[in-house]
Amino acid sequence: MPRAVIRYLHLVEALNYRIGRLAMWSLFALMAVLGWGAVARFGFSPQIWTDEMAQFLLLGYFMLGGAYALQMGSAVRMDLLYSRWSDRTKAAVDAITIFTLLIYLGVLLWGGIESTQFALEYGERRRGLWRPYMAPIKIVMCIGIVLMILQCTAFLIRDIAKLRGIEIEERAA
Image (cartoon, rainbow, N blue to C red; front, top):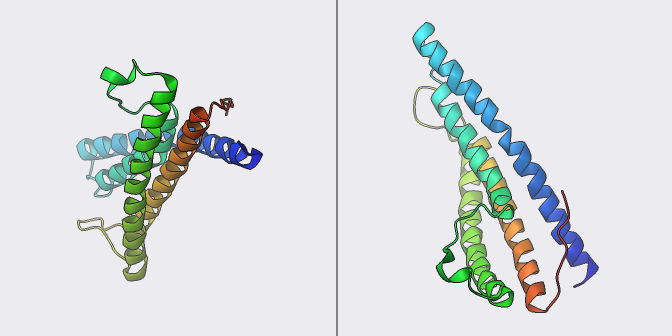
């Protein structure tokens, strides 16, 4: 494999690892928001922003941590047949499924970009009492989809290398 491709692969995996680890810390912000909402609800006046902010934090956690979860092998896989296959067969099947996932993510990104453009252009706000702007969370959503696309291309590179009989070493992030 060309050195530039291997460098790209390691760069994408390091980026997704770091962003995923950073996204894990957002759970503490989520707990703080939910804790404040509970205390405010029972202690004094309820806060109208806590539920929606918790939803936004959870979406950010989910979207930014998706590529990291894929990288760590946390995705669900039907192991009935897969575990019995050779490494080359696994790589061939993975390359096909990753290619279809890339198509799906591409369509999702296209819709996300259009939705983000709309939110930015018209100042879209969420319905409800708090009415937060939607553009920031839609931007985070698009970033998460791009990270997933990058991680899938890294998987595709690894699978193609494996099909060609080349093993690319894992780098510690």
